[in-house]
Image (tube, rainbow over all chains, first blue to last red; front, side):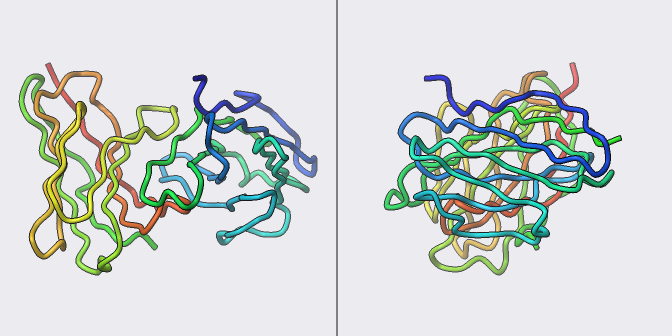
Length: 115
Length: 109
């Protein structure tokens, strides 16, 4: 089992550009959540996808959007990049929602640098 | 906002037990206590979770007070590889984790 995989591992973009980050959940998991972690801070919840729909959203602007595919993989899109979007972006997956109180597994993250 | 309070940093000698405290005085009856750790620049790693009974697994033990207002994560024999930031999180499920600033544990030789 490969666990949660994210791509790419590192990325450099210019202000104003758009970026897409990808996540493949752990086998058997159908819920994917995205987090942003700025340097020296704890991860901040962006949003969660289940059954190809956004189910919960944190305090992030509409520039942050996502998608979940039928195979449960997910994308995070950020438009009009700002310098402040530079961070480690983490994807977490968890099993079917009826199995509450099970652990979420995190990927290794994508380090995004906006210049 | 995070519903937990943790010390900013702690030190522990290699081979000794590391006891990491967490206060969660506003925890609801159906909320669990989860512990994750994050080694530098890696994704958070699940350690253990519990509701009201003490729990133990191959990584650690979790001691929850009877009133559930605080808990302690115990690493029985800390190694240098346990140096990390440890996050205590209370939640009903792990779909949306609210991280605080965590405790930076430094294990020294």
